[in-house]
Length: 99
Image (cartoon, rainbow, N blue to C red; front, side, top):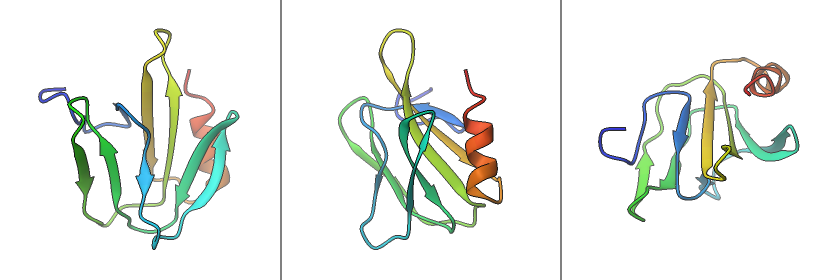
């Protein structure tokens, strides 16, 4: 990551997990027993970068999105964001295939 705060890919490392605005419709779910959230519509995501600053992305046209946090072999958090699958079941099936 060039600036240490964001990666334009499916997975991004973060100091803390995703947070969602209270006015936005999300469906709590899980990926292999790890907490996750499903967004069926464009949405706002905020996260804390490695420097401790809050970063946000304005709502944009994007397909449904599944977000979950896991840990790598060193114990560091990795936040995954999967966009595109049209249903929660399809997104969970893809997410559960991530090693």
